[in-house]
Length: 85
Image (cartoon, rainbow, N blue to C red; front, top):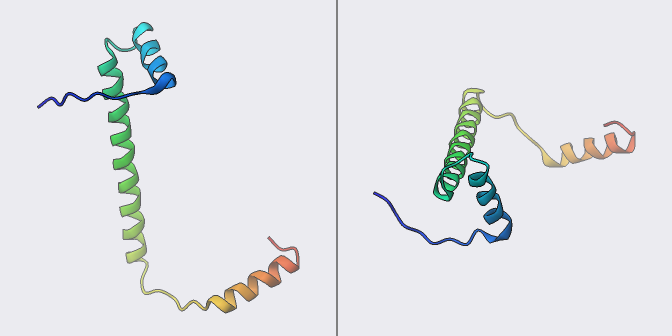
C-alpha cells in the first residue's frame, strides 16, 4: 500500500535530493527519500540490536555487586586530588 505524503524538506535537504537525482544516483526524489528512510530504519534496527545484546550481556554477567555511592565519590575525589586519571 502506498501512502502519499506532502513534506517540506527545507532548502538544504531539497537541494541535496535534487542533486542526487541530477547526478543520476536516483531516478526520482521519491527514490532518494525512500533510500534515506531505509537507511534510518536499518540504523534504528542495528541500535535496537546493540541495546538488546548489551541487556543480555548484563543479565548473563550474574548478580550485581554492592555499590556505595558515597564511597565511590570519595575515591573519585581522592583520585582527582592526586591528579590520577
